[in-house]
Image 1 (cartoon, protein in one colour):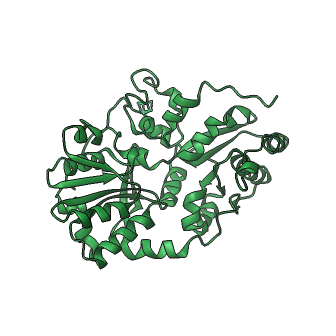
Image 2 (cartoon, helix red, strand yellow):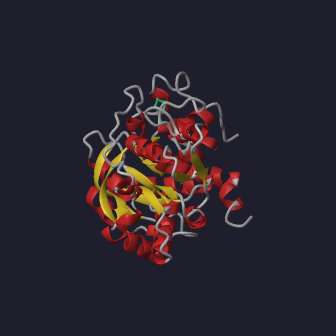
Image 3 (cartoon, rainbow, N blue to C red):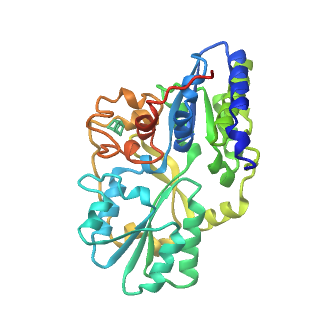
Length: 366
Ligand code: SF4
């Protein structure tokens, strides 16, 4: 299949590995931002095949993982009302809140449903006018346009029993926050290709300039990731910084301007609390005041709920690239995908789940 097979081609992957090995002379730490890239790296054994000079650390780009615990508890409080149909993408249903998860709320008889689009939730609201229909709007810039469209449609069609519980975060402020930390180890970023497909890469240029690092928008197949790493290593070894695009079959500098327009129309920037990391200024979206009537946190008065994280979970350090999942004392013991203690184990994009699923794979180039 065009645009897929050639990016999974073992011969091309081997050539890229040889080129990386021939280029690297010093120790470098590279962070892949996106949980999808983390899984691809682990699933294909890329971390084992790279020269020992290169260390990959895993970033905060898994939306389920960085959604704060209090937001899960707010979702559970809303979903536990008899007048509500609570809708969400499936992966949020198993994320543990402080006492239970949304699947347990469903098993208690409340109306919690998986949908594949916020527009499906809007349609449910149109069909069930006697109920309040709430969509859990979680994610990065990739899901924001669809959620913004649903709110715009609800406003135009006067569907007043629809609202969204917003927990949107954005990538560039998190990249900057990690680079500004005194503990930072990251010297180059593989940026998430799908986020750049929406937002372009123009927002990354000032970050690359300010911190003098290479940033490479990168795809998700093994050849994509190896090409991205090679571009970063070439720049690091040459003492260069800036943005170079690996994912040029999908991404351009400006991104999808229509999608950016609808995001700006419905949302505005706000400070967001990132699970395990803390509050990052202007790192998320909330509804503009003109659309405040569609804000589920206000409608159901749950925005006061605050929750403390489990002291046993080090997922915040994992998401900042400071620890590997296997350094967590409860990894694979008390904490497994069947009984997750933290969001990085429950999410299909989480780094802990990636290590749990793929750590047994041993890979060679022979
Ligand atoms: S293994 Fe579990 S407890 Fe440990 S960091 Fe990962 S999610 Fe948290």
